[in-house]
Length: 331
Image 1 (cartoon, rainbow, N blue to C red):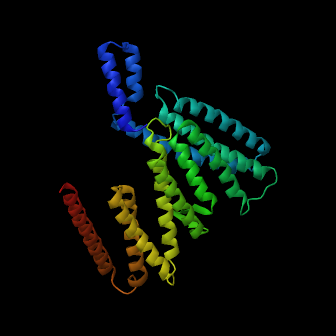
Image 2: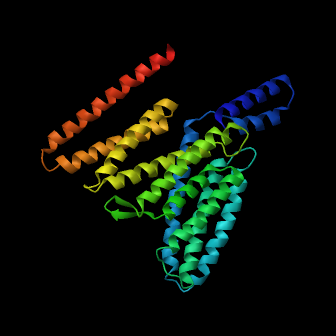
Image 3: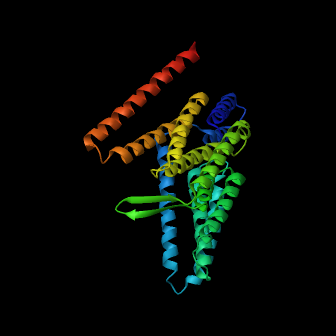
């Protein structure tokens, strides 16, 4: 539900309570349901939920590894499947509770249940004779993504939607791993295909916001934001990876043009998401080009001095342009 709608309903509830149209108990229940104050405590709870999902997801991966070497390994898929069902059912009940007292905890349980479901499918496939090949992992990811998307739209939950969209991209061949020493690696098997799907995700997100989410009573309000942000992330990363080989000048130009286009589009639409991604990846593009061509030819101090100067010049240019646009809109 949009914050503006919740604020309007909260105001109406307060008026009804003061006018005596509803009792004190019902007034307190409705006020708790539609309160919109984002306190430090609530923000802290959300971040704790995110951390909990991350840690629980790691524990699932550890369980898969341990179950492969145990004598009772054939029970592991069924244990995981049952746990996934119980967690999913309990999480949905908590997340959709009318009073919304445990909305974050419920979303965490649902998201964790989907991770456990993925682990159950993967463990079952490996235990009963399957081999981890090129297509087995992506297929299981796609199945889990389908379950996540169903859960998201059925109950109006954004966390499962995020998991579903991310798993969809990873099913295309996007991968990451821990390299040790605090370093991580990410790779995209087919950057062109990922770029196409990312653009489709952005289009779906824009359509979602401009068409479906105009009905403020829909439970999927906010879904478009997820599609847009994830699509922008993977689209820009795909263009960045395509531009990395030194002989790919055409993709370097396309990457630059796309970043500038996002900044312009964000300014036109007054949408900080496009502007933010455009500025970040334009900066990454400039830094990458400088690193490739000048890192070995000039001193490190001069390199960072030039990079910092270019960043300041770009920031000043964007700020001047933003001020001129504000003056034009006020005139």
